Length: 140
Image 1 (cartoon, rainbow, N blue to C red):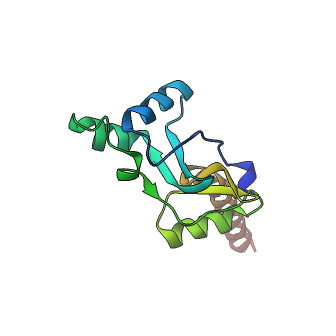
Image 2: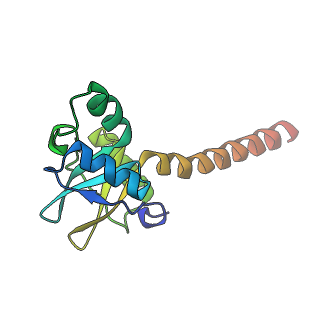
């Protein structure tokens, strides 16, 4: 399984954009997560939850620049990376999302939920195999 099978193309905003501009872009696109890019390079991402509760919820945060509430992310992955490699990078970096970089440009986001879905199926396959092995041992 590869990142390209699970990545989500997400619109982007600039670190200089305001919280209001981010909210408008999220409403316009229906996306709950946006990439933050600067000069074509990934700087991180913003989530609707952070925007709502930590910025707009304060009542005075509409003009707060994205740079003050974005999650910075130095680590990235590629579309051709394996899901396992991307998951290990997330664990190492302590992040739940990674920007996906292809030919030097950020093209999408890869998040923990996608990884969980992937491994969820594998966990059940392993458990089924363990149950079959236990039954064979018991019968034999």
